[in-house]
Length: 89
Image (cartoon, rainbow, N blue to C red):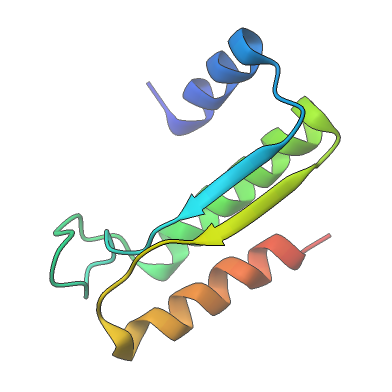
């Protein structure tokens, strides 16, 4: 099952008026806690998918809240990539 399929199922079931992203980056490959080995581009892909889904599901109403990420030397670039993906047309 893909991430996009899971979003579709959630949208069909709950029909949200607003989507809130809890943007945690501790699953980044450089993070000492997550150990999930995700890269900046993975977070960009997730962000684009959620943004597209929010556009279809609730008119694009979307909020992103920074949660975690514990490698400060990489966190800034990852957050910047996420915010840039949010700002794309």
